[in-house]
Amino acid sequence: MELQEIRDEIRQIDEEMAELFCRRMDAVRKVAAYKNRRGLPILDQEQEVRVIEGRSSLIKNPELRPFYIEFLKDVMKVSKHWQQYLIQGKRDSMQC
Image 1: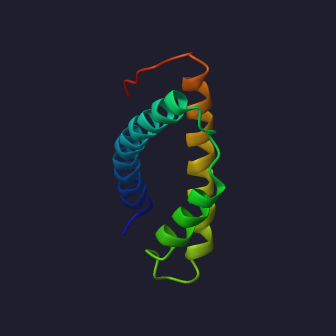
Image 2: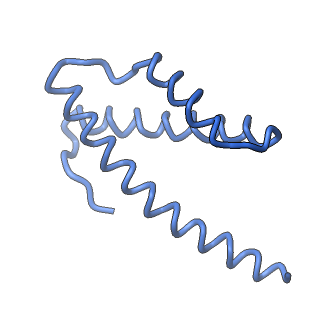
């Protein structure tokens, strides 16, 4: 396989991930609205631990698992920033 073919494969995966990112952030928007209505904090450390433990078990390759955990932590950090942005009233809807 040539380098350009591999890069094309990565580009295709990135396009799929962009769509999934938008879907995830839409779900996070709903979480932010729920928390905001009930006065709940954005950070739920116990939930984050559950997510990391549960989702990291999906990665069967032990060499990749720590990198996936890092990826999850980054995604959760972005999700918390998005919630903060929404709760501060900057935006209540999303188009991706």
